[in-house]
Image (cartoon, rainbow over all chains, first blue to last red; front, top):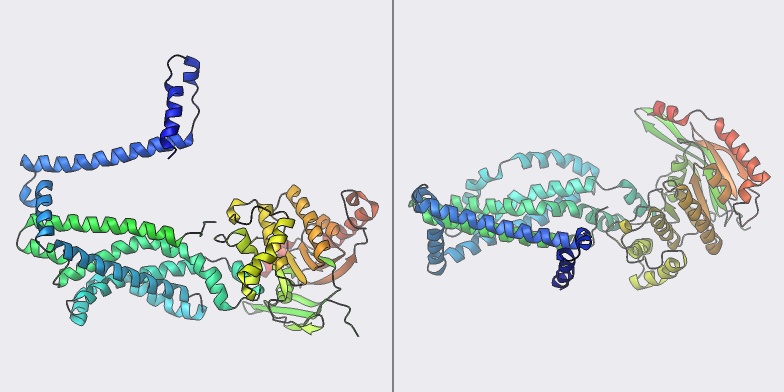
Length: 287
Length: 265
């Protein structure tokens, strides 16, 4: 913790009114400046959030916004707490995040392997490329009803939909990574007598890794959208099903609870993904 | 009878087919190189230098001809020579040490043994204290050192260097040339060195092979009889200047290489 120490050392110099010359000399300390900016950023972010929620609350209380449609933060909080403690909200959140994460992980792994495999044979990659593009163009969400018919209304149909949302995007990202590899690097490895598998593990995978990692943040949102749509179609659990149900019984408060719950899930998973990125790119420095 | 040559490239020809037209990259070229020599190969672009190196490294096979190492056929076989290009080609996600042991790793050595082999070289040849840095933290000259140590450590008796100092500034280049001569003298490797720079070729080499383009072929071989170790004075001696004039005249005969390159493509 050198932060407080630095500030206490700097402050007397800057603010000393007794010595005007000293006061006018300001040594730019990037670290201190950066810390100050970071502090200001966080304060700004938090106050805007609070202001937004307050405004929402006030406007709905005053009747400027119709609380039947817009609900209001205090009611959402209350309804959310009741659903959490007495209802199924917690299980629903587990269900949705479970399907999302499983689909995300499977989709990323399978997609990455698929994309990386195109390095192996130019012929195979050229034959497959149009199918990759075509499948990418298919709106996967439109397949949801078929998947539910095929796999039933259980957990697996949501996982598969989340998986489908992710897999091709990742494959394309990994394939782009493969295409961007410096051919001289491969040549070097081959000249050292490396076997194809060694070139793959020592050059291809690490080179493509940043591309795969870059697709992760998009993937987690895509997977969540897949899981929610799967629940919309037909499900016994999940936040998506809860929102649909609440909408049907005109319980807008509960809809808002669902939306907030999904936002919380999505944000949490987003930050978890950033953490995952850090682990995966450990040691892989950009050129 | 003992083979007097370490490396022999015999009557090698390489023909590519491009757009239905045959293109001779290298024509009937023969190089016979005794052990421990420092050989430079000089010539305008399109003279088949890269093709020659790829053939020696086993990355491509000559259409006709032979490649012998100690009298053994190594045509199309990789892993017999160390190869280094102008780009340092250090893997950015590996530290300098991990980069240097890459060749040994590919051969299948144990990590501990590889490091034990690499550390003395790192310490002796100017990378001491940098072994745990990543390539992007090092200057161009230092990266070339690392790339060359990777090549040297691979333990092949022949080292191919394809314009290794081409991207460096003049001062760094001179430093690197002396550094290379030091390694060459210490480790007694046979070096084949491609360069565009006549001064560099004379300063470093025992023999200079002059290639000429379209089709790429061997024009002549010049032996550099300047005494070693060579210094700044060497570069102002009469015999040095004469050699330089001779080489300039030989290379001047060629057409403008850039024009011709356009024509081929």
